[in-house]
Length: 402
Ligand SMILES: *Cc1c(COP(=O)(O)O)cnc(C)c1O
Image 1 (cartoon, protein in one colour):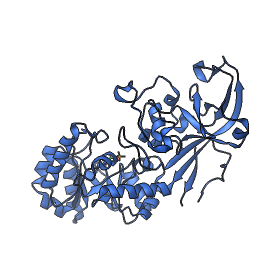
Image 2 (cartoon, rainbow, N blue to C red):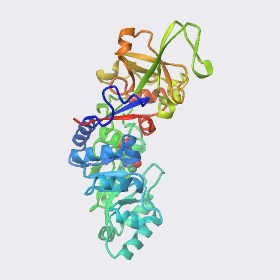
Image 3 (spheres, rainbow, N blue to C red):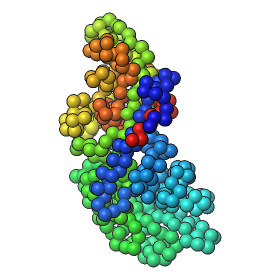
Image 4 (cartoon, helix red, strand yellow):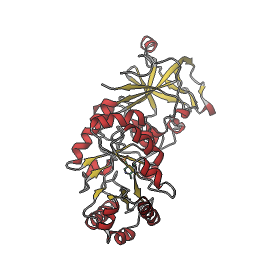
């Protein structure tokens, strides 16, 4: 099903964003297999990682998702409209004054400080009924959550807490993308301790990276986000998730420039040969970051060491390199970026693409099936998460629904 545009798009947008809900569901089922006996939830914060809550949540409900995690209360309210009977956990917790809004929308806060816990207790006394909540315990992020010391203290009353609505214990791994990191066993040991303190409460540890590398780790429910959306969760291993998003830029002009001429702002790119240029109508305002076109940006260990060549399945093997992919894909070939990415335009070298083929091509793939999301992210010194969540609003959307 296409909900916007025809095959060649509406002609009024510069970019096209194809969201493949069939691939999304396949990724969910794959993650379910990794979860083993644990329930597999879906993290849909930040507008479902930029893909669009209104498309992603109904597709995931249809795929069997019963539990969602969002960051903020407003996100939870949006998800509640789309998933009336799901459980919705709010990672942000219950900031002062939000208690009754949370209850009104049947959102379950993951309480992340002793102060929030006190106020939630007052809320329960005021309403005169248990109100579902979870505890977010920090075991190594120093981002949010009760300290282990606080968790041990309140854990002495875990039966009382359970009677008041405590239904979930959660902690978040800092280094699961790097399974050999020494922080992993430390956090896992603290999670085991939490499980024994709150032995009668549902527990959760695994994000995408932990789930893919270590399974559910004894948690009752897993919390993948990025892997659902086809992004890389683990460093230096093949990404077996299917790409869910394809981003494309419309070719608005083909130019012929001579060797020695320069391209784009700063004249940083001097053409070494006579060059055929595809001028495309997507730029950094569309989340195609300026840094993707800057050759000095490096990612990987130490930020300036080439990332090891890794096999990445046949889909992207041909286009993968140590620094990511600084190119688009058109007519079966890579088209390198020429010069700086600008706000609304990016120029690609299509000299090697025959004119006849180029006449037919109207779009250059920025990432998708032929160029992996994370290879483009690497070229810009960032990660797939950031690329997806900054795609911007100007893309025409095409929804593939099977
Ligand atoms: C974002 C987030 C997740 C999902 O992480 P991914 O790396 O995208 O799988 C899980 N749990 C918490 C608490 C999060 O903030």
